[in-house]
Image (cartoon, rainbow, N blue to C red; front, side, top):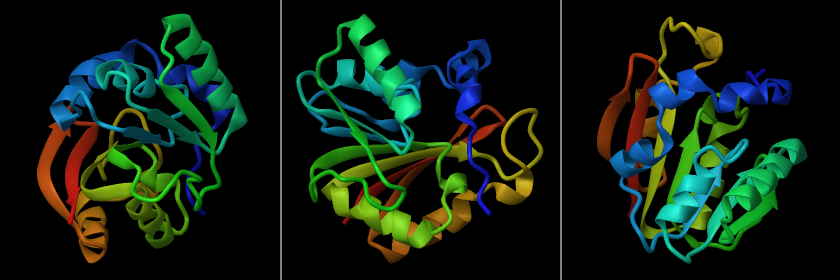
Length: 190
């Protein structure tokens, strides 16, 4: 059974600790998000990265994708408060992202892969929405003891993820570390 985030803990998705460890704009810049990208935040939660990404990409679409209505309602509230109008909110199924094929130039997945039961099918679905030459950036918990995060046996290592994505024609272009808690990977779709 995969470790699922409890939406009752949504305050953990935007707090001082997270802003210190993963400041949204700086993190998106480090991952390579550019003006003109069509962005998808896969498992967007409360929109912590979606809203700044939408502001960074200009008038292009930023998809906020999540399976939980209460998270998407929070994205709606926050984006309205920020005056951001280029976010398309989509309630997805875990293995069906419900947006068009090859519609995204930059996909982001933060602390999501460890929650997914059928990782192969999930990654295939992500591949479906990303354009050839598009990027997929992944941030997840290091597979080791950290102060916060899911149990170690639920975490998914960067080597495993890189191998799975290589099988579906994604090439790892960059590996990075975000404090001792998180790894970052940037893939390009062939």
